[in-house]
Image 1 (cartoon, helix red, strand yellow):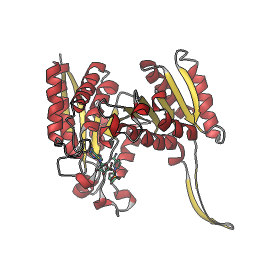
Image 2: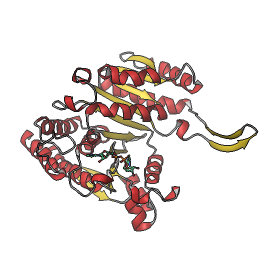
Image 3: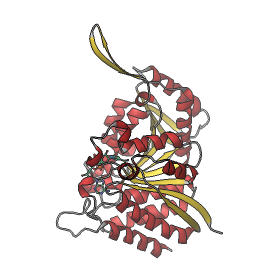
Image 4: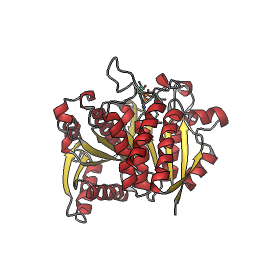
Amino acid sequence: MNQVKKIAVIPGDGIGPEIVAEAVKVLRQIEKMFGYTFDFQYVIAGGSAIDQVGNPLPEETLSTCLAADAVLLGAVGGPKWDQNPPELRPEKALLALRKELGLYANLRPVSLIEGLEKRSTLRPDVVEGVDLIVVRELTGGIYFGEKQRNQSEQGEFASDLLIYYDYEIERIVRLSFEMAMKRRKFLTSVDKANVLESSRLWRSVVERVAKDYPEVTVEHMLVDNCAMQIVRQPAHFDVVVTENMFGDILSDEAAVITGSIGLLPSASLGEGQMALYEPIHGSAPDIAGKGIANPSATILSTAMMMRYSFGDEKAAQAIEEAVKAVIGRGEVTVDLAPAGQQALSTAEFGDRVVEQLVQRK
Ligand code: NAD
């Protein structure tokens, strides 16, 4: 019997609707191949929701997401809303959604697709074999600590409080160990324990949790060194876990390894199976409406959905292999096409991925 899954779909702004349409196309094929019935529930958020109802995250969107098994998001934002006051900014929708859904872990896998070695900003021999995942803590740390801006005798000052509770560290560290167990059993915990007390707490929690996972090799790395090693020897890493701000920076750094921002998926996980899946890139207003955006990152985000929300590794791999096969044949969108080569449109690329899946059947 088919498994019924409710998927809240937020196309969003800019290229969001174009790339999400291709991801849904691929999921429709997965339905047929792997015995699912997907109930897609389209809702609005971001700039388009501000325009339509004056609220970046309408109540109906939130309740639909809360009642869904997973959320698929395109991207939100664009120059049209850049001058809006803080409560009417598109990104408010994302922050509120993460908070309301209790999504504390952001996962960004980075692996090199065969055939794209030359697209990387790093030398082909350096990027060969890269297959890592950055796990970033998403709801704590300096971004959420108390903020102050005031005058004192020494002049104007500002401060941001960096605070972590051990339970916040433990849940993300445990999730990372679990992930490492399913991969190459190698965990790098990144901190700044030589300077920060919060990092010393982080490190002691990692040491404590490590006792429950004797098969996993753990290394502690200072964040400045990690920033260097990611470009020096990226293939060294398997699972990299770190706090919010370090993760924000390191995951963007790791992203350039693959050659195009249009290739990188992400998942934001919480306590339950419920999670949010989205490409790491934004709404790309410069190419919106042209039908040329690369939908790979969004399609690959649905592979993460199959893996982490529905526990279906086979379906996840089928999607990943199909995307890799199409790109490996040189059938790519304009961001990856060599000069002078005819590129595929967004929809054509989605069609090729579906055709590849059909052949596999
Ligand atoms: P961006 O990621 O949208 O675009 C950066 C560059 O990459 C652009 O040249 C764009 O054309 C290109 N690009 C991005 N995705 C692509 C794809 N799938 N295929 C081909 N090329 C692609 O970043 P930006 O320009 O800094 O931001 C644009 C808007 O997106 C802003 O309003 C920003 O706030 C928002 N944003 C949203 C999210 C999100 O929804 N999660 C994330 C980042 C930025």
